[in-house]
Length: 375
Image 1 (tube, rainbow, N blue to C red):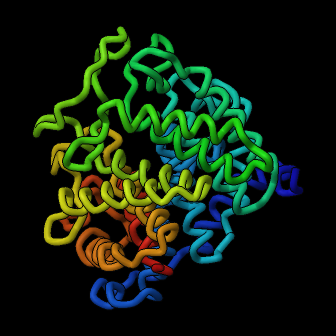
Image 2: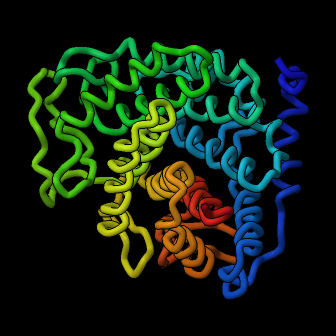
């Protein structure tokens, strides 16, 4: 365990405010900021300072949602990896120490809870942090969570893990996509691993035949809400099916990691088909929007950023420039049309500025950072 993890809670909590100050920047001219990578990075820095104001002083969590705090932490980690600004490593360490044994935000230890997607979001955040620090403490936590999720793999519906564990309910896309990414990525980081790769291959074999991916190359939320009773059927992929941008995103990183693990180019080809279909379906004048438009439910503020962040993983892995103009367009629109004078980012990247939350803030930062260091 590194020395940073031995800091007292008081010192670590104070670091939250200090780090936010370190990121502070004056207001950026929207017209100027939309033009260059340097100005985009400056905007991302200022926006991150705003995001960190929502950090819980006692627990280190960003925002008030357990799973979205994990997503926002990955946003922060990706920012640090991309820019080289590691000011906030202390904050991530603090979040780990304050929550690994359970907390008021989530009483269960090891970042586990009754929803397998929640657990997976945290596992991915810790695995990402391991790749940054090479501290095996974080790798072990990711493994602990992966093993916990795999306990929920059953033969109902032919395989897959449940979204909700108890009572077992709904084998949906997001829980299984996250499990694919987690296990394939673990294999790529655990020396001599065979277990996680076998789990990743089993997940993709089931997922790719279970009706999640339609002829339009888009991923639907789940085969059937009655799947908890073992009554599974393929989705129709009609206009009324639940199709969210984050479901299109996580699968991209999962397939990219599986490609790295196996060298099988068919995984990249599948991911690129999904990515291209998503860009066609979910952009209006080149700017990404959620399928639900202005009437989305709770949690959806995070979805677009998750898609763009994972699309960047695919683009870098595949060494393709095919999405570079897309990344640039999102950043330009967010800065010009969806960021206020206080560096607050809203839900709608093409405007109007509305639904300004920590979740929409993190989502927008994901898009800004994705536009930096393009392949």
